[in-house]
Image (cartoon, rainbow, N blue to C red; front, side, top):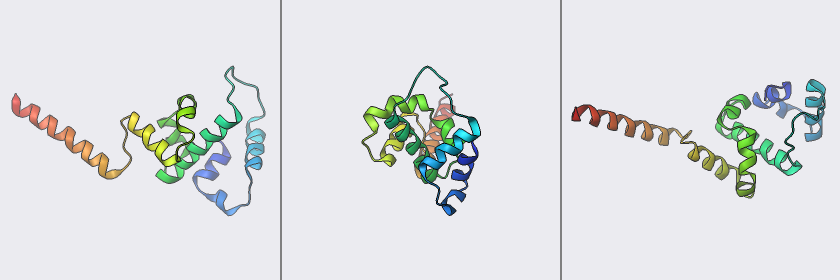
Length: 127
């Protein structure tokens, strides 16, 4: 999420190139080196889906890779792979945000804040 290629994906400069998925993987290996780090190994399908969800989330909500990573970690996404991998990515992201009580849709967020305001106001009147 902090690689040079992630920055290129975030600022969309990658769209001006003809880079392929395998090239991206090679660039990450060049920057960080190939490794067998970690005891938990993700399947190819899990890695592909997780990467796709991160990038889709980033593009559609206009968030950086780091911002999306703060919202949901790979371990959480891996746990959601089986139930969500056949869903439309936008539906999967909406369900993830809903489960976390997060609403990035401005209208929904404003409504949520208004409800909180009303509760606080009612509590002050009761005292």
